[in-house]
Amino acid sequence: MSHKKDLLDKFAERHATVAVVGLGYVGLPLAVAFAEAGFVVVGLDVDEEKVSKINACQSYIPDIPHQRLGALVKAGRLRATNCYGELRAVDAISICVPTPLRKTRDPDMSHILEATQSIAAVCKAGMLIVLESTTYPGTTEEIILPEILRDDWQVGRDVFIAFSPERIDPGNQRFTVRNTPRVVGGITEHCTQVAAALYDSAVDEVIQVSSPTAAEMVKLLENTFRAVNIGLVNEMTLMCDKLDIDVWEVIHAAATKPFGYMPFYPGPGLGGHCIPVDPHYLSWKLKTLNYNARFIELASEVNTSMPYYVIDKITDALNDQQRAVRGSRIVILGVAYKRDVDDVRESPALDIISLLRQKGADVSYCDPHVPEIRLENDVRMPSQTFCAGLLKNADCVVIATDHSAFDWREVAAYSRVIVDTRHVLADKPVSAKVISL
Image (cartoon, rainbow, N blue to C red; front, side, top):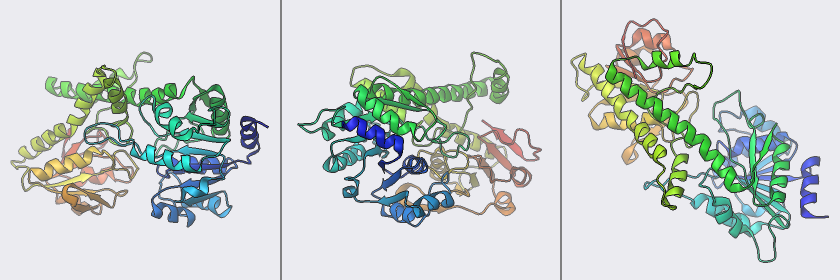
């Protein structure tokens, strides 16, 4: 029996053991999805705390409730480890490790390389390796393939390698691993077919593309599309401010057009691991080919300037009270990068806090999902309890993240001055002065 047929049979009959390397906000939901599809799943992470929590039926990902995770662990469908040696017996491995940017805005491939080298040491003939981490076009063929392939192996016959970009949207209750279409591109046609068969067992729809490089580019197009359009609407915000026009009125009116327009909304800046980071992978790759990705660079320039624009709005709000930024009590509502998540990576709220502290403001924050943040010089700041007193004592309240747990009526009732970067108070009765972006 060929390795391909053996894997296809195992996937169809749910007899395969699947490993997921990297158990963060991408890897853990994927591991749960495979386990719920009927596979035995081994999750691997170098973080011993994550491993211990999973094996104790405790989830650290808000989208995965403890009960849902615990049922799989107790049934023997899912377990976690930090030892690559335990992957020797698995049939398929999905790599879901972080891909951050260095301070120079170059890709940091160290996590992918370390994971791939560790997998190569335990890889056996007949194994499927799928990279899910967002990266630059060419990574699967340039990094994964040379590390995995042995002299006497042929890709697509002895080992199967593919790329399938993650499409997790933290906090999204409508679109999950199961009902979000999955793109798959293998190094050979057989690789694509085997990888598609694995994902087809756990998701509703699989789209096959011609190569891993095409699949890598799919993810970068998706996130670049969002980054560029958010950059456009953020610049429209700056222009409308100059023209003394309400940008939200303009957006809502434009959104009534039933064709040729898709609404995007301004905010205090881009956050999260994907949208602010992924386009730079493409930009970096194109620079190696002597091409300047102008839209990406311009969008990044606009989006990264938004926290400074928010600072200007805060300064104006305080000036109207005849107060300086220095010494003013400013409360930031929400520091996570988006609503109802606990992820602060690249969050513009952190930039706003740092800039205000540099100007001498007395800054505090409240976020029910983030109990503590770390600022420059390893300064730790705890979250304050949301209450009327917190709002009353503030010279200015800044809505940076529109968590559903916040009582906006209280915010409107007890705050003196509000800078609303998320337009959440537009339809609320407000006695305080409200400044929107």
